[in-house]
Amino acid sequence: MPDTAGQTYISLLQSFCDSHDTSLLTEAAALGNSFIEAGMTPMDIKALHDEATESFIGEEDDTGPLISAHRFLLEVLVAYGLAFSSISEKLLADADAAATREMALAEDAARAEQSRLSLLAGVSHELGNPLMVVKVNVSSIRKFLEERNSWPEDLNERESDAMFAIERMLTLREELLAASKNEQRELEIVPLQLNRILQRVVRWGRASAIEKALTLTEEYDAGHDYVLGDEAAVQSIFTNLLSNAIRYTPNGGAIVVRTRQDEGFTVAEVSDNGIGISEEDQPRIYERFFRTEAGQRATVFGIGLGLSLTRDLVTALAGTIEVESAPGVGSTFSVRLPSSEIADSE
Image (cartoon, rainbow, N blue to C red):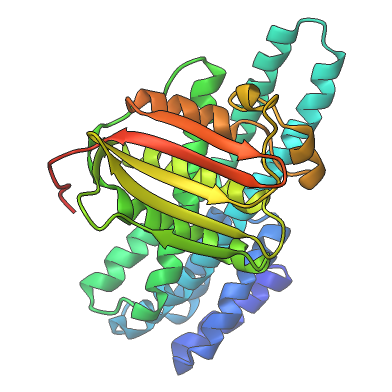
């Protein structure tokens, strides 16, 4: 017998298939958090959905109810993916805190750090499995609905945001797994339009910025902005930098993402007027698991791997990363990537 959330799902699903009342989709999306709290995986949701639809959609029915059922499931999976991506980062931070306590008791620092990396990689791998299931199912449902000219345009942005959040966690999983083996994940270097990627990153971060009343602005070079890079790596670089800027800028502050050209390179900068980094700490910010004392006071969240992974990715892309910062003034991270004369295929 399904639990309360499952019973609600079945009831809402049948009501939506009968009435097509779009207000029910809002209630359906809210079930995403309920399923996570109940410990249900995306496969559990899919099994519940399939069993429910089989009970009231017969083979003789036309595709109308089936399309409605797919639309309903899509809303729930998108909400689940967004919520689970956010929760995953908190769970990673909790795992890191536990690993930090164990490291303090270890005598061999190098071995302890490797164990810490392995633990985080393992946790990240487990978190990535539900997200991969969501990604595959959302893609499958989108294809089904598009083939029947029934894709809901009003869901475009939410679906895009969910897929971005999911991709970010899946990329982090790959990076942690590679770091735990002292390897660099394989990159595919192609021409990319940097401004478009940055716009996607900024849209991802805007909700968090709004929560803190931060002003988040974009200033892109109107000229040539194509770079040579790996799309997932470039997204990871600037998601990490923007995430840090939002995290370490007090409420009411300002963040600017901008690009410019510099002798065969495209430079992208993420500037904030946050807590800043002392001159003494700046040489260490790219070390694995290093967090400044000011950063730890500002927020307990964070595992001290973001900038280390970011620098490794920038280096792998034949680029450079620099920081200008002062305590109480803010920070500007500048990433230089090789420009490309060839437009990407998208």
